[in-house]
Length: 74
Ligand SMILES: [Zn+2]
Image 1: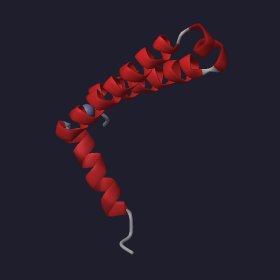
Image 2: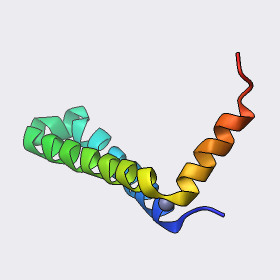
Image 3: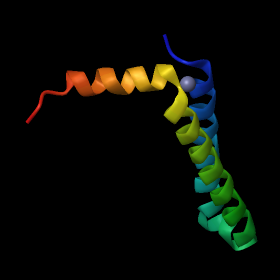
């Protein structure tokens, strides 16, 4: 069973990434490069929050260990 905090933070990161991509579009960039910079900061903040949570989330750690165990050694 997944972690609801991981799911929330993953959704937040996806939303921030989408906002950043939109802000970087040609139309938006002409209006405000500050908006693109703001969205970049917010996207990186969301990425950092997810990374910090995953470093201490039992569910995320267990999923990473399981994924590693399913990958055959070279
Ligand atoms: Zn979690």
